[in-house]
Structures are given as C-alpha cells and as structure tokens.
Amino acid sequence: MPPLRRDLRVTIEVFPYVPDRTPVRKQACWVFCNGLLVHFCAVEAPSEIEFTMSREILNPRANRLSFALPDAVSPNELRLGDDLRKLALAFVKLSAAQV
Picture: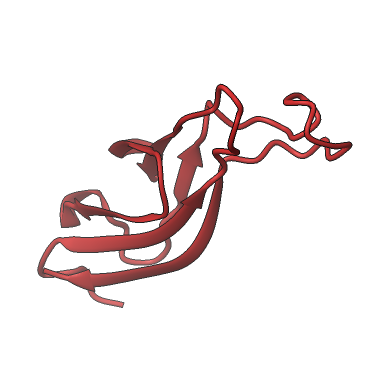
C-alpha cells in the first residue's frame, strides 16, 4: 500500500459513562497513534471526537490507534450495582478520510 499523500481526518462517535447523581461529570480521553499523542479531549455528553493525524506519523502497512481513559470507573465503585468493569466511553463508530 503506498504512503498517504494527505493527512488523515478521524471521527469517532462516543457515549461517555457519566451516570446521574454521581461525581463523574466527564471522561478524559487521550488518543495515541503508534505511541504518539495525537489528541486529547474531555467528553461530557454523547458526541463526535474529531482530529487530524499528520501523514508523517502513519505507517504504510499497519497503524495502532490506542486510547488512555483515566476517568474510567466501575458501577460497583459508584455503588450503582455489582458490575466491576471499568467504564469510560462507548465507541459507536469510527471513520477516517484523507484531507
């Protein structure tokens, strides 16, 4: 696959875990591509995260997009049930296009 000629615009539709009547008001989201920070945002409501990645950091073969979600919390920690899973963002849709 040839290298990209233009930068890549990424859009991710997300729903944050911010239950009512709890101290959780936002979910911080750090986005990395191949280990390099490409975006940061704090999500308070269902929304689209949009950012552009420089073609210089993209590998022509394979790329790894990873997320750090430091505000993730379990319903059990919030005394909202027995669920022990750490929840932060529900990822609904990811799209990418050259810009």
